[in-house]
Image (cartoon, rainbow, N blue to C red):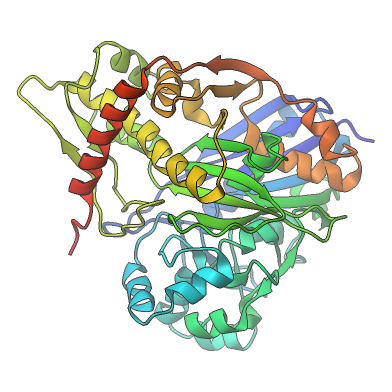
Length: 498
């Protein structure tokens, strides 16, 4: 067996590649940022060529960094920003439009019309999702409706739709594979998570031709091999999963009730609910976590999606100039004893779970003449933790489970101040693992299982270890008083756009 698994981690702001060894440790990492496109307020796009070119570049770079050969790679696992939508020509591979990013809010009016027409409950029953512009289905329909000739070409089978995993797999195989996995399919608002198939009623409702859609495969299975021109050899493609499902797998949340939170551009909590597809009256999403190739049954999860987390820190740095680096936010937050009553609600693209308000916008409340940049920076970090509690409160209630500890990963977990405040505001320990590259690690684990690099999830679970545990320090009274004021601030942000 070759010594490494290659994980391709295609994110919202950068593409990364990591080589892992049999102990699940990263051997080499390469990363490349790519541009964000904002055609108008609330719209977010990517150039599909930037996605592919940056991902291919870091894949080759990481192999060179490790002084490895393509023959040293047992399999490749793909993980990706979810819901981001692409449509391209099957013959030429040329996209008909830019990728519409998961954050993009352009289809809010379509979603509002679907709700007004009474379709929300039926869509939720079939997909586990709320009707929101976040998901891929309305994005695909928008492209077909706004790119001249594309709808007719789609109906004739000339075009291909995919989320980013599908786009990467297509390009990695020179156009030979048009596939996605169950976790990504479950985020399209076109896929029935109970029958595990594309849903004809949803396709009709959103006016998306079936001929456009990829084949749905398990998350861990050999799909095919790479075109040797990409990486210098034909390497097995061992699986794919959306980034949050991959991170949950990488955190080895294999038992029902286990929870992880990923702090990236957004913030994403997932709870493993096992073989139960738990409905959430409180506004969380019921989603497919993964399906292993040798198992017919899928593993389900409850998910709460916070749209803006790490992106709020980037906003402090890039738009406001309050910090020079993201790391500086930690020392600034610690430089004041509290926020001085300031609350930042970073609803820049609306509010996600459990509020689902596409018309909310960012607000800063509680400002006084004594408020300074440290207060605003601290309040922005606190907002990440408060939004996490918003989701946890609903998750515990809907799943009838108690949170014993929160496993965390993602870039912001390097901020010790934030992790401590997260423990304080939740009132439970926060566990940061020794390997925080859990999204890529999950993709590696899924691919490795498909080719026998690892033998079982149980073997993988034994590799997980804690680097640091943050114990809560606040009293219940202090915690609830802070959170109560946060909820008041959120109410001020809701329904701002008319």
